[in-house]
Length: 110
Length: 119
Image 1 (cartoon, rainbow over the protein chains, first blue to last red):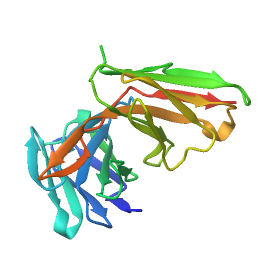
Image 2 (cartoon, each protein chain N blue to C red):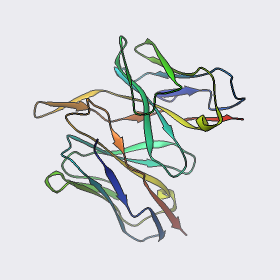
Image 3 (cartoon, each protein chain N blue to C red):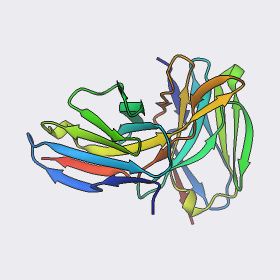
């Protein structure tokens, strides 16, 4: 099956800093989603982005499907951005199932 | 109220006991999923259902069973719980999406999670 690698595994940021999280995948995808898991365990869908660029407030994401990667940008980070960020991908052969990466743990310090 | 509701939120049980985790949704989605999360790992798919009469095994279905009682309800059972099933369990729902004629799973929406401890 498709392999999903996220980097870095851990990230510590000072409040106000910018950062980039990366998701590499091993095959062509027709589905890519980014999620944030807050410190209380809640999982929130950030972006549905199989290709192109999207922005939502201080967060934006870009997927370059032909080069098999996606980037999640956090600008002017806040302590509420702390948590784990997951990307998940799907292919035409996966029948709608998504394969998750191991996540990037982000800690934003005041 | 949450669109995807899981019960119980926390459960401690003993080895060999039968446990059921329940999930209900008000989003009107046909697709429902059960995932398991272990510390340091991503989410792994246990079972999924694309409509009421459709049940499919995911990558880690051994030791689990499911029931899709209605479009809105999807339950996960551990027939005889064992300690290595201690984990955080998530139910999720999605719709279908079409991009340029290519159908795929839409945005995934998760419940709040059910933390299960098997002693």
